[in-house]
Image: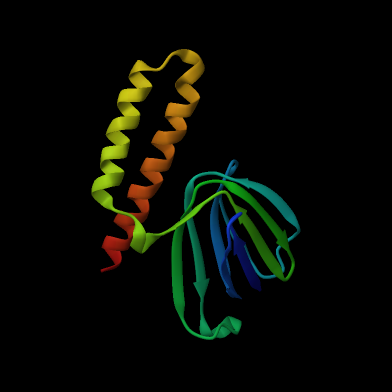
Length: 140
């Protein structure tokens, strides 16, 4: 199946893949070729694209990146992701992610009830960044 990933600024990815895993508002979702049509809201989390020789990919590889929100559309032969923002795993600094988690914790403790949602979103993004970095370190 074809995978198309774009942000408002540019196209990030366009290639064949066997499967894709994304974090949606309903939980983690894994999509294969011929999946039923679907539209989902993306939450901050890991986006994983798997390519294997048996599904007509040019090479065997796994790509992981951090999606900070957006939408995912599934058609039987294609997946389109319109992301608010994407960070490649190699570009994420673990130390900065840990600092962001600490900052978000402090903000959450001090936040007025009407501002707690923003602080929780910052925490969710920082934790997703750290998760991407840790997964990358486990592979090496």
